[in-house]
Image 1 (cartoon, rainbow over the protein chains, first blue to last red):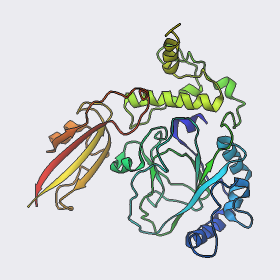
Image 2 (image 1 turned 30 degrees about the vertical axis):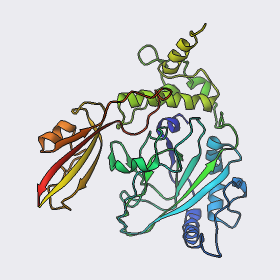
Image 3 (image 1 turned 90 degrees about the vertical axis):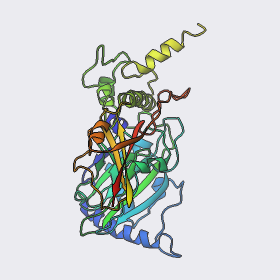
Image 4 (image 1 turned 120 degrees about the vertical axis):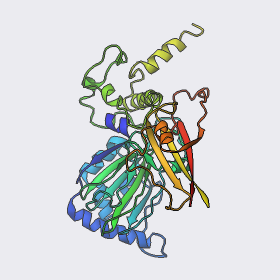
Length: 283
Length: 88
């Protein structure tokens, strides 16, 4: 979870069985064609509880009902999330269109709540064959989507490549873009956005948290706890300035406070220092 | 006829010799002019671009954070825009 907070995504290679992957491609193909047709396969209505979405027979439903996928979903958005929307992202062979870098939906509010977006790649994706481009660590920034068009290249950005059945979970704020497909085959991917319906506090397996949760005194220029959450939240991505990096540590600490219910959590004293001084005013 | 090539560099600091962390290229010559160096990034910093013949058009203003937004990040902060004019 700390890696998700620091990077804005987490990846599970080949987590969906091949049989579901194969049926999934066919269902994505149908959904692409029939979504806006008078009849045929339709996505769920926005706001539908996830457990009511994609009823059998459905490969997409079978994938989302896999115990390991339900566990992932529950860890981020709880046991009863609702369906926001989905889309089948189909990039044909030799497609040359490069989608501009963007963030989905609108500029975020200031609270730390978040949606997740699951990107399911049901077949092998070779490097350069249409895998999604994304910028690790970009998810907590406050931007307008079209403002990102300008960035053709960012140091440290990645383009997905991986085996069939891989699912990548994105924080909804992660900057990303579709890419050309230089390969000979169709590139299919199903993206679904899920909204939490409960506070996202300690929803994942937190057995190891007491050992890893560093105290607020943890400071890189003083003393630190090795192998702690703070060590992960100190991840500096190659495109960040030092100011970016420190501000990101503040934003990650705020998100970690929300996720753990620990209002004193801090990394490198940034929040604690300011909160301590603020308490002096009028004291 | 003279055509313009435009290069954006984003740096990890406010100085022109700060390290490049992002870039974009727009080619008014439609491919008939010189290309960028085949490296990633094309220039390690803005000074390297100057030395390759690029002319600085604009650098981003240094703006203080708005009250209440001191610890929020948004766009890449340090943007340098260059041009070179190519006879085609």
